[in-house]
Length: 572
Image 1 (cartoon, helix red, strand yellow):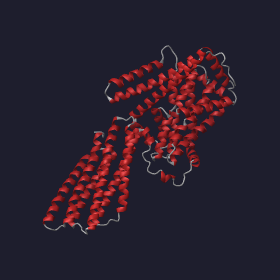
Image 2 (cartoon, rainbow, N blue to C red):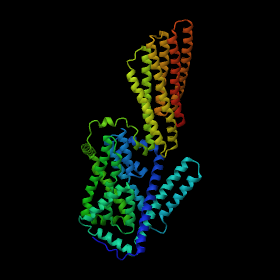
Image 3 (cartoon, one colour):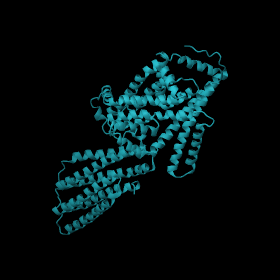
Image 4 (cartoon, helix red, strand yellow):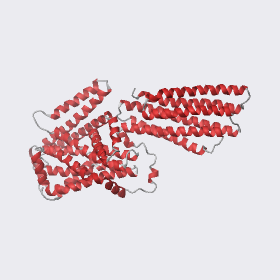
């Protein structure tokens, strides 16, 4: 089909370019506002999001509710799905649990369409103007106040305001485009494209794939929905045309999660595939009635809701609600199909082992902080296990555990670098004040754990020296070492509980045990001098014993430091 543009003047061409630039600028402002609001709400609701994600492991209905709630907070189903891919990749969520959360995410994203419809509401007093003022108010709050909580509220206000400003810029640009000769030509083109509304035509297929392609390019179904609502407000797009584009957008939004899953674990790739299968199946279910009876469906919706913008928002929600209700009982089937499409390759699971701090977690800093804590605890377990091996080798004079010790020490050093590298990236994100304090303390904690590993290495060296010199400790000396080991073991248990639970109730007991290590160290030094004067200890064994006492006491100090680190952010 060819449309004549002979009636357009050079001035009309300039208007087209100006309007196109303003539409694109409006999209940019809209996306900046969405990101600002989503990131700020996410930071403010960090603890709530952690609780929601924990509940998602309960059952599929809670999973749907969680997905909807989290997506409503971050204002993007793509962002939620990328998070979920990251959670599955690090083992925080199973594939079946992820499937239900993804379904909920598709429901949560429909909130954006209602926000856009609200922006396009007419009347003498513009709602968009109110939210534009809200952006200014947020800017002033951010500029003037020093309170961090108020600053975050200011950023949220700015984000909400920019969303409406962007939508208003798009609406005005489309309105200017419709004036004069240009309006007639563009209107004729859209009318021709949507004139066969009661039968399946190539135009409907074109609109569907147009929605898919544009959403994939923009990586945001919300941005395309905003454009569609602006066009519908100018009378360029009918409800049936908008329905086809919206259906296509639901498939296009899967591209983000598919890209995110590249290089991730097999189950993470399957999560992205479940997202694609869910959205494609829903579109297949809806596209047939929309194609063959779209006109009648549009008439029915029009009889209930007068404005096209609100009709589009309502259809977007109805589509996702019905698709979820239809497919929720078949989650396991979707998962099985995804497993067939994305089979597990030999050796792939091993190759991806250890990628527990997935970069996708950076999109949810509050959850990423929790995952870092788990990794630090694992690193602490390794350091403690090596400490116990070192003492065992020293007491028994047996180096049979040396190879295992060396492998664990290498792992401790690698984990130290790995965790700190992730912390650097995480510290660049928009963080809540409590999370900033946690990250700051985590740097010191990993250093303390690494130092415990180093002291364990020293103890192994003492064991090697004792064996080489064919020297050994007296039974009294061994008893004193084991007494110190008992206090360090108890200290490790208390510190681990305090750090994992972020609970200050363990601090008094930790202080007591740490003081006990200091006392036993003094006792060991005094006993060493007594044995030396009595000639009941060889010089070689005595020198090792004195150094050992100091090393054990320093291990207790580093454990004490780890416990004290939680004081910066634990609830008093």
